[in-house]
Amino acid sequence: MGRTRTYRIFLSDDEKKKLHNTIISKKTCKTIIRRCSILLELDENASAHLTQIQIAKSYGVSKATVSNIVRAYVDGGIQAITSIKRNPKSNARKKADGRAEAEILRIACGPAPEGRCRWTLRLLEKQVRLELDEPIGRETIRRVLKKRTSSPHE
Image (cartoon, rainbow, N blue to C red; front, top):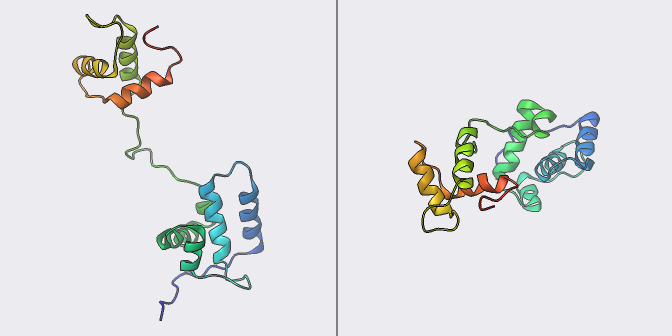
């Protein structure tokens, strides 16, 4: 026998309309569309609603995702479902700030080391490590150089 539900979802007509409008909007990302669709499936005012496990299987998400959507709706309403919160202090912050990017570009656009016709990422990594106090990886250097329209060897 399953556990009883902690949260029951009863959507009003206005909330259903907002969710449908969000789903059909062309500017809405897939994550938000999926959240809105799951919330509509969880509505107990509908004639036939599915269990959380059935919804998770049909939408290809885990049961925890469905539970998190329910909890977010109960805590914050429709606004919590239709927005993605990003934490600026997360690990997704930039590895190289503007000063470091400028130094990388200065080194890359300068003359190549002796015996070389142009800079390689490994050579740039070694030179940046020598000139800057903080170590910056090859991938970060590649991204910094790729963002610029001019190539370093031109």
